Amino acid sequence: METREMTCINCPLGCLLTVTKDNGKVTVTGNTCPRGEDYGIKEMTDPRRTVTSTVRVKNGSAVKVPVKTKTDIPKDKIFEVMDVIRKAEVKPPVHIGDIIVDDIAGTGVPLVATKDVE
Amino acid sequence: MYCRETDVVIIGGGPAGLAAALAVKAAGVESVLILERDTQLGGILNQCIHNGFGLHTFKEELTGPEYAARFIKRVLDEKIEYMLETMVVDLKSDRTVVAMNRKEGLFSIKAGAVVLAMGCRERPRGALGIPGFRPAGIFTAGTAQRFVNVEGIMPGSEVVILGSGDIGLIMARRMTLEGAHVKLVAELMPYSGGLKRNIAQCLNDYNIPLKLSHTVVDIKGKERVEGVTIAEVDERLKPIPGTEEFYPCDTLLLSCGLIPENELSGSAGVALSPVTGGAVVDNTLETSIPGVFACGNVLHVHDLVDYVSEEAENAGRGAAEYVKGQKAGIVPEDDTVMEMKAGKGVRYTVPAKIRPATVKKDVLVRFRVDNNYKDVSIGVFYDGRLERSVKKRTVAPGEMEELRIRKEELDKYPEVKEITIGFVE
Ligand SMILES: Cc1cc2nc3c(=O)[nH]c(=O)nc-3n(C[C@H](O)[C@H](O)[C@H](O)COP(=O)(O)OP(=O)(O)OC[C@H]3O[C@@H](n4cnc5c(N)ncnc54)[C@H](O)[C@@H]3O)c2cc1C
Ligand code: SF4
Image (cartoon, rainbow over all chains, first blue to last red; front, side, top):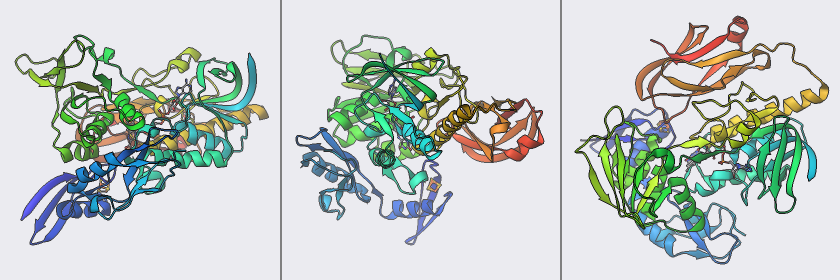
């Protein structure tokens, strides 16, 4: 049996969760809403994060365009994702939601723009 | 000097200004103008590229620029007039707004109503009283955020952060992702000023230590920062001799709090609260100057943009009603004012006054507590008498609380002079 205390990061309330894993079954207490339970289970079994950063723009109205992984990616892939982001470059125009890199670092998740750059 | 008239002038094109403008328009006032000194609308959100915005408003997690874009689109769709690279330099008590830009030079606007939405700025280093030289490599966290996220420049590679406000926490993660080594976040107070989720996902995720009750007592380096000395502080926030530890670094980020940007409000004679640094407002968010309203971070520092947008809508509605009332020559019959007081454990309330005649349903009161507490009961007192209370498992200074003052209660106690929000003993 494994018990861990963690802060739910799904909303600003930041509930303190107690997550217990017993014979593969995960139980969560301390959550105020169901999203907290989902978070606790995921954090114990398959922790994931959304990565946000910026990508260099070639001759645009801005130097950088902000980006995010469209959904969350495995936590242990964060730095591999960053390596790809640092090397990436885009040509304007770029629009919110445009895919900058598809399947970033083998996560199956695309990297998308979060701002328009002309 | 070029001069024009506008029903509602909004100073600042951040989330507060945008939402206020939309509300003015929605209330049927067509003549509304946003003045923004930056090259784009959206305010501070343009540099807040992390996610965590808009859960409340849009039921999804957006990044700062995405949240701003939704409001900017609506402002464009509504054909609301705005001027960029236009700096408001003066506001007079008769609501004359003096601004300047390249095209018009200095010009003035006679406004029917004004909404203050200038946001806040970071407490500079001078206010912190750190001794030593002023070598390169010391930045406020927000300046560093702008460098990294907008200009694409890394301020340094070995970093110590003083202050655990949200911007500092966000920047600890951001600089780590960009390859810097963030050695430590030191916080003077015994608690963090940032959200718990940011401590979890910005520090704990990357094993960045947070030292509470610690501060910077010395900065080494003449040309460039070479390191800082950190010491523990006692209950009176005085460094404890013998606890000093030296951290080599080339960059020191300061995240020591935000202060509302109120130079303009001050010059107009708007009464300011010594606690929040923002205007003293009533429930319509009107300041001490009739027809001048305030919302967003210029009123009091918010952690959540959703609340900024909601508050700004309220201010926009107030401004629109004021203009309509003035045009129709309506003089309010009942001008009773009740004072809102911060009671035990509470630092301030916004609003600080309630005008019962203007209350339609209820009044949302936002407030902050003065320390970390567990299992408290927060009460609403009418002239010192407890009316009702709510229980809270935990409250913290970094997290804004809210309560509603109900219309039935205001109707029940028309003679009341003071409404207090505070802990129940
Ligand atoms: C680093 C950081 C991280 C944050 N993280 C989160 C988060 O994760 N989730 C969340 O919900 N909220 C977050 N917030 C809070 C939220 O972003 C702010 O509360 C919100 O942006 C404040 O909006 P505002 O319109 O009041 O101010 P601002 O966005 O600062 O806008 C004010 C505008 O007024 C303009 N202005 C000022 N003076 C003048 C003048 N004299 N003339 C013309 N224009 C002027 C400025 O240029 C600026 O554009 C964060 C804030 C910061 C600073
Ligand atoms: S459990 Fe629900 S309420 Fe608590 S922090 Fe998580 S999402 Fe927010």
